Image (cartoon, rainbow, N blue to C red; front, side, top):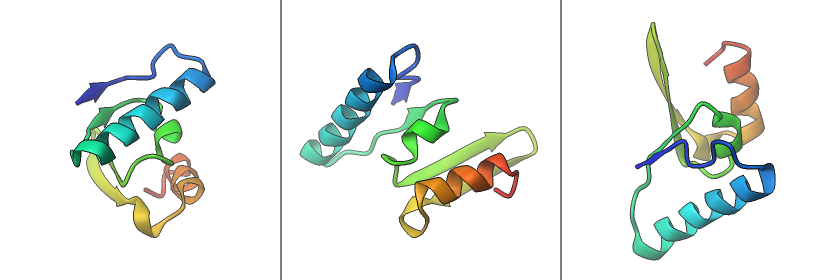
Length: 79
């Protein structure tokens, strides 16, 4: 479980941390849960995104959608 692992990092460092988490998952065959408010930076890394909002909870499987499509739909309130 990673709670805001890239909070306060510059873009380059945040990318490195995300890649390290992804490599760790692959190396050990484990699942990681990343809690973040900055979902856009994790869409390219995640297999699934679970959005928590006061009125609803939404699971998004990213294998079937591009990260850009998901980000656009979230921002437009369609997801």
